[in-house]
Amino acid sequence: TTHKVGYLIGSLARESINRKLAMALVRLAPPELEMSEISFKDLPLYSYDYDADYPPAGRAFKDAIAAVDAVLFVTPEYNRSIPGGLKNAIDWASRPYGTNSFTRKPSAVIGTSPGAIGTAVAQQSLRSVLSFCNSPQMNAPEAYIQFTPGLITDDGEVTNEGTADFLRSFMQEFHMFIARVRSALPKDA
Ligand code: FNR
Image (cartoon, rainbow, N blue to C red; front, side, top):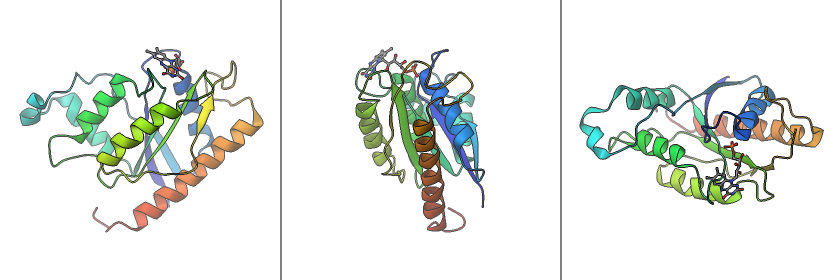
């Protein structure tokens, strides 16, 4: 069976290396995973003042998450955490109270940075947020990708064979994880 995966790219930068990584993951994913981007760049800054009457951008964002079987976070590390835009998006999806979009929604986390730590600290921070949001997370494999110049082309071709193999197996594991979580859910969940 196929599964729909929505991916969120934590960076809004035009030349984002995490966008390149996301393109690579789309190319390397097993055919059972239907990959589509869920954009959050048009969301205003969240406040619970919006809860009584969610604006269209907030509704559309929650609808996009509801429409997929799993969520993949491809994020940079900014100041040892996730970018503010991504946290803002997660806050939007988690509300209004009682309608948290992440409940029972399987997720995985990956990211790349030029530094050797490869977004490890940001990923730990994101995992705490996703735990509170009740998203079942793939624990392993972890993926901390150091972005050396030219590692991934703009359209997502991975130039290092070992890295390509690793990213391919990451997506295969995510596929199996999604299947496991989904099969444990009641049909209407
Ligand atoms: C960074 N960068 C960075 N890198 C890192 O490994 N740990 C960090 O804490 C930070 N902090 C940080 C803060 C801010 C505000 C910026 C703009 C950058 C460097 C970062 O990894 C690099 O710019 C990547 O290119 C960011 O990924 P995207 O946005 O290109 O996908």
